[in-house]
Every structure is written in structure tokens, then in C-alpha cells.
Length: 112
Length: 207
Image 1 (cartoon, helix red, strand yellow):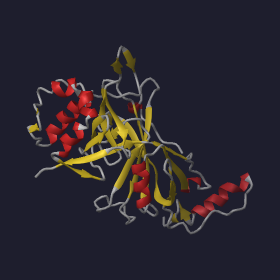
Image 2 (image 1 turned 45 degrees about the horizontal axis):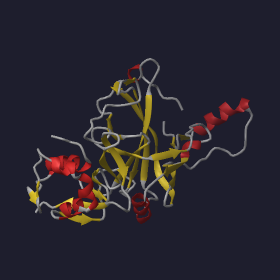
Image 3 (image 1 turned 90 degrees about the horizontal axis):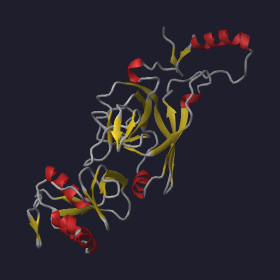
Image 4 (image 1 turned 60 degrees about the vertical axis):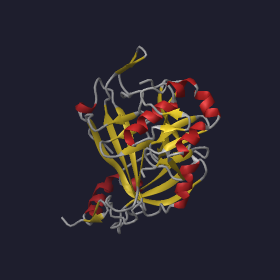
């Protein structure tokens, strides 16, 4: 498992909590082979495809709770509680926690 | 106020101290955590703290110096939460904080040493993995912990960046305050004894 950006780290974590879709659009979500999302990360984020991706199987909510998806224009994180979320930091090479703010888009994985 | 720190919770005269804050939102004054109400949990530590049951969110929180003496100065303290975000301030302003129970717990412990990038941190840092958010688990650490303050939220205010609250102890049975005049040092012992004959720690002395 190659955990090298915020998207793959978040997906890996969410996959242990929820049943994620196997494919989306032109992408196939293979949890053991996420190289595409790492290689084309900037393009993926710039086109806001990460938002479209989670929007395809999540519902947008206003108040976060644990394991909700937290999307910003440049990152994908996971909510810890309704005040904070964690996200992979490329600079530090590890996960850091941040406070939720107005630019965060909170999405909850649909179980149905 | 003096509390005993056991030798188990420190090594080489070095120990770490953190505080846990609980703001109960159950509105019943009964400290019953089974209520449907909510409990907000914060810590002044720099990472999340997990006590085995609950998780405490790190936040910049400060409070007045606590004292406990004949003047009963610890019956009220002010707590300030700084550098908050819009979510917390919006939540705070939408909720009723006053008259809700709150408590501050002090934890004293010695974390295990860890080597990061060639540097060994003997104390003050706890292990963390690279794929989960930094969290200190204190459930398995030898520690001293005691309740530093317990009371209710009296006044509360919030701005976009700061929350502040005044906390009062629940001296609900306190009906006989110490005299306001000052006494000579020589007669003070007998005066305190006379007061304690009726009142003991804010309650009627029934012994």
C-alpha cells in the first residue's frame, strides 16, 4: 500500500470503516493500487474531482462527526469530531490535525 | 493546595503535566453523563488525549491561577479558549452554557522516550504512527490524576476568536461566609475554629 498523499491515506482509512464504491467515472478504485491518484494528485485536486468523487456516494452535511470526509480545495481529510479533522501532510510526511473552518466541505458516507 | 505526586508518575525528577476539561451540556446539574446532553472535552496538551473512554481535543485553553485557602479564592475561576475557529464559536453562541457543570482534571505522568529523526526525546512526547492523527493514550500510563476544579459555568462570552467563561464551585450550602474584617494573627486560629464548628468546606458541619 502506497500511502503518499492525502487522498489515498483518507481512502485507505475510510475503506476500513465503510463499503466504498469500486469504481467512479473513469476511475477504478483499487485500494491496493492507488498510484493514479498519487501521480495525478494536483490535476485531480485542481479539477475538484475529489469533490465530485466523494459527492457520488456521500451526502453533504453541515455539522461534522467522526469519520466524515472533510474536503478543502487542496486536500482530503477525515473528521475527528465536529471541531477538528486530520489530514496527511506532505511536508511533514505524517498525519496532522487541523481545525474545521468555513472552507471545509463536510460529507458523510451513505450506507444505503 | 498540595497534592501528592507519587514516584511512579515521575522519573529523574522529571514529569509531564496536562489538564483535561469537560464542559457538560446535560443541563441537569446532576453530572449524569448518561443524559442525552453533550459533553465537550478539551485538553491543554498539544495532541489529542485518549483516556481509554473519551477523547479530548487539543485547544489553546488557559485559566486563572487556582488557589485554595481560607479566603475561598478558588470558588470562581475564569477560563479562556483562544485561537478558536468559526465552527466552535458558532456552536458556542448557539448553546446555553450557563449553569452547566464543568470540571478540570490534572494528569501527571512520565511519557516513554522516543527517537525521531535521530533525536531522542526523553520526556514530553508520545509515540504516534504516520497514518493516524497524533494522540496520547494515557490509559496505560502510570499517572497521578486528580480533580482540580469542579463547578458550574456562571458567565460566558464568545467572539470569533475567543471563548471565555467564569466557573463557580457548587457551594450551594454555603450560608455562613467568613467575616469580612481582618483579624490579628494571634486570634485567627480560634476564629477559624469557631467558624468550622458550624461550617466545614461549605457545608453544615454535622460531625
